[in-house]
Image (cartoon, rainbow, N blue to C red; front, top):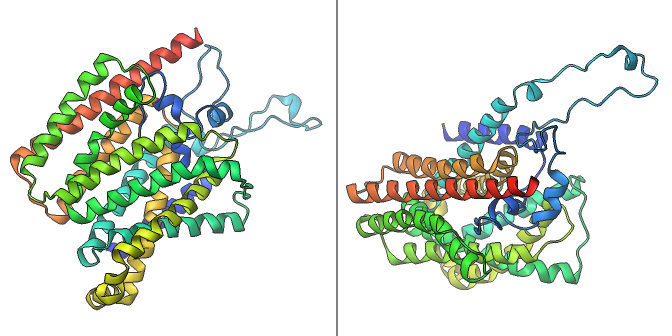
Length: 407
């Protein structure tokens, strides 16, 4: 059953990637939807606010507004000069993707959630027999880097040149990315997946605090007020979480802070390079950042009994297969998240992110059979509801400011 799910997800993802080649870093380029007017930074979504947005947004329509929902395939081009059909007013047939864009967007949402859930489940299954999050984090990045190198090799896309100036801009982003990624995995290995995602629901709080006190942006009182149930819900869930331990809790909190600072440094790294190349370079730098801690912290244990124990429990083939697939799903679900979020309006974007966390928490509880107390369940629901309210208010405020600028 597991192998069928992996095959289906890989095949579906490959077809989607062919439809629209992009990368997880493109999420970072959506800063006009996440940073600025609303005063919020959403982790991992900001890198080149103006440059790529200016290139990717469609032209103004007759009403003076931009179309937010874009079909994947380009519209049919007009007949060339000299074409016999040019003067007959014939219209090229509309394809399925152009005729039903909402259906295609819905499928993208499904695949995004599906791959995210599989990644979290497979990641936690590996930790159950191979509790070495530093090494697994390196594997995640390594598989993604290989994917990017193969893409460069076949010219999709063509590799962009790197210089010392660009490297200095990207190193802080990559360091924060590496730290946030590793500490997230340490938390996943130490506590239940559902609890880690509950703690990570505090990301909007750290983002708002960074926007207010680091970037000097004014956060509306309504946004601060909407964060109160998030803090309350996480506190309630933490007090009675059966899998609670300080390593898992503190690691998740460090991850929140790291991703917040990654967003801050990303704003400074505004370079004229396509997002796929930028993500490849940042992944390579992050990989080199993650390797030394993995060797120092887990190296002796891995060589002594870590690999042997894992192979004894599941066999060499399954062990290597699990590591490969968890790295692929880490890369692909981020890529599908990009494909999905680029097709929708900011409010749908915000709701989609909240629902994704609900899906991951719910499926992880069902799959692993984790027992949670009543108070933990109520606290988790309150926290997720708070994130939903915060996301809704922020998206509405940003939309109103954009409308004011266009009028």
